Length: 248
Figure (spheres, rainbow, N blue to C red):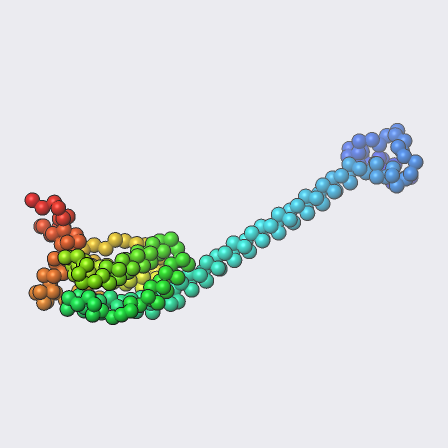
């Protein structure tokens, strides 16, 4: 009994093969004839092999995608850490400069401030800004832009300065101190991001009274600070700031 006859005699095998009874071989060559008889099964086997290989390829692509994603996450983490490393020292240098500028403001001697300004510290902030998240980037951008604008204003010759030069100067210093101090927690890894929030009058006065050690016990200093804040935020009425130009 041949293999074909044995299979065809089996009731289960007969249900799987299309032709079993009373059919002569199609080809004289037994090898070719075997391929012909088993072509349906072989086709299914090859299809299974192809499906398995495709599955292996997809799995490999998924692994590569996960590895690439992990690599991007790792690179971002390294960049974020790099951005923080030199930031606290740069912020400390900037704060020392703001305090020295405030002392020059007290004397009404803007030219007596330290020169040159700590541009290296500002460059560190600028270099860090390109490596951080979007929210912290805006905070660093505000510090950089305001610092550059401040230096440009106070570097003007005396004859070209505005009448309200010193009022603007002290508000600028308070704002720069506020922007600088808000970045400390990020630099020290106590905060993941620092969103920019415009300062209020109370916050700027707090910077002058606490962090910059300018207390309003001296009546003359208090009057000058109040005048500067009124210029920036408007005069206070019933405990609220009234924007300039709305009196009456």
